[in-house]
Length: 193
Image (cartoon, rainbow, N blue to C red; front, side, top):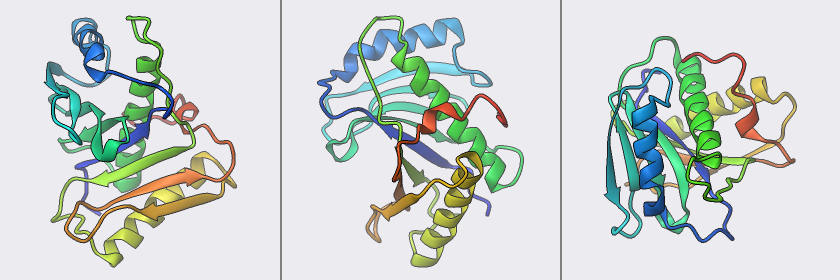
């Protein structure tokens, strides 16, 4: 499994009325303070005027962070762009950890703006159609890999994994824990960044 261009997205709580462009100063603060480990943060881009788009993006050499607005489901996403050492499981651990740490950092933002994320659901999005074409075979392969990864981190958790992409879209699926699991809390140990 050669895929390294993929992302993880955590969704905001639906009752929050968030204006994503209000978080532009927070992303500039991340750049100024070198807030994301092992990432060269470069610039902030405002796409919030585009409905169903990437919202606000923090561009790094290694990947892109975005306050994503796709499908009217706001959330925070990290998409890796450059290669990561190790097998797919190690790359997944790294991307998952980077995303979860950034989400927790956003919740503790320096602006004092309230924001909260759902902790028992996330989206996996492949961003390389050659390495991960959106076929039943590849869907099953990546679902199984993500399921195995989550089971190692959260032993015994019961998961629902739902394909949310059509054949003409990038391979993507949601992973939801049936019980009250906090996917954001497992990233302190065993980090492969």
